[in-house]
Image: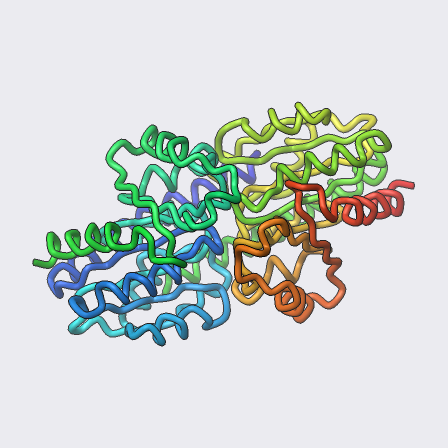
Length: 223
Length: 223
């Protein structure tokens, strides 16, 4: 028990430092007219595939950069660069989330000059990334159909803090016991204003509505 | 950067305390002849379903207890209790993993007297749980088919530290681009001695081989 309490106290001071750093970063990005989106989900929910679809749809209109955070490997940055975006791979050295400091370092490595939109693909994790403000303007999460419609009940902070939930892999709905209405109901109980889009990054179904939402958000912030 | 370094130093001292506590817990469980299994995976990979199948197969031979760790909700403990095991739900208060101290508290709440096997269902997370010794005798992870065969490349610590990897949801293999051989190859490159079982907790396919392995491990430790 003592051990527990100690961890939590340490985390509090880290949060306060991080919140200040995130606010600074957001202010700087607003001046530069670069919109930062933080994309979170479990491992394998389809973050990279969604980013590739988003580049395909918005890439002609918006200059897009992508930061791919992973504990190891450069698989995702290679995929995204092949889709035509400016990309960097961030290795988190075992860290389970990105904070504002790490995000700032990533943005410096990417080089934001001339970019309208930077997408941060966070570490695949439904817990820790929800606790740290990265400096993003909007936070978006993916819940994929195979994970189950009960996830908002188990990981409430993530579903409470995001601006938008994307339900991905709708192409495999026939093969899983996933109740779309239940997932939406659970998410809205925690977060009544959450925007929800159902998509299949594999087939492209539903990508247009998600990209229209994102494009409106970029316009609203950056003009 | 300073912020980063500070976190890592704090974590080091936490690890050392935790390792001592885990070793103590393991010694006590060995004397009591209770085998502790730590089961880890991403959210929605099928930990609870696998536990239910394991209770069905081994419950007549072994007295089984289950600790269901979640940030919130009691959905899983209810499911497991309905399958006939002694079960408790542990709420982690936002923590993204279980350490030995929390596991010890859970065991006290469960009551281990007369139990041959206790299964700890860890928080759904491929990152943090791999960093903390819970006091378990064996560590097992699930990789489910929809998550993709590249996960060992991205979450290497998890795949390096476990004794066994269960590839779950083989019933949906036809609907996903999942290469079974690639998944095994990536995992064995990190962990040559890893035991691997392919199962469908939904249909029951492959459950027998997994349960035989677990039963042998329990016999080896507890007699």
